[in-house]
Image 1 (tube, rainbow, N blue to C red):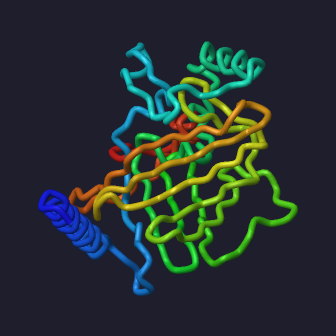
Image 2 (cartoon, helix red, strand yellow):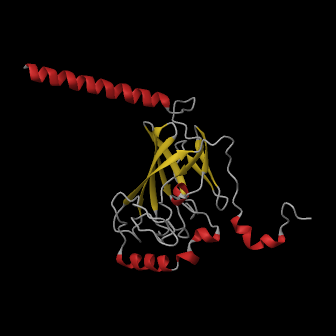
Image 3 (cartoon, rainbow, N blue to C red):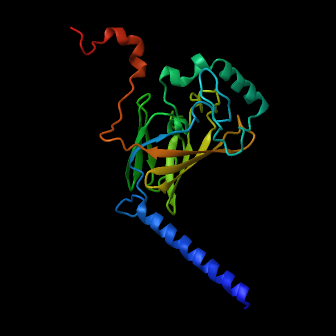
Length: 256
């Protein structure tokens, strides 16, 4: 082996060793359950503009500008579905299910710009969201989707581990939720595969790949980061938005 090749080989070995040590340090740094699986318990929130519009967009009266979170750049709509999406966009100020305090669905509930809490044990994860009293269970006990699954607001979630990544298969949706405030939507044939993995102990890399043969011509993927809320004493506060139209009938603090 020539001197240059030997030197290059040594540099490569050092680089590989450094990479392995870095990966081992990272693996040791993330929170884990007693079983050794990564523990996503905590309160999480995105800083992205995904909920305003998944695709790249300029600022408008009802949304700040955003570079988009769709890996492919644009959502691959079928022509007929694109027309409906445009109708949704034009009527978004009154038709967005969020404004009716309906459940946000999956994956929108993850990147809605409000915090949500995860409680985790070996058999499942429970996600608690503020809006619409949404609660979602991700089963990690090896169980499968029901054979005759009903249509659900949050779908049916079944997870498995691929190393330190939680891969979640979500099926059995209804067609009542939107994907963002811009009117991007899906049908009851939506199928989602999520991937949850730690970047560091306070950051989760979240991705969701969506397919829906009634609406999209191909599958597509979104990517967002979720950040741990570390404010001292921070707790979720329920958003009783569905009762706002009856607010005048409820007593308030300070009322006699």
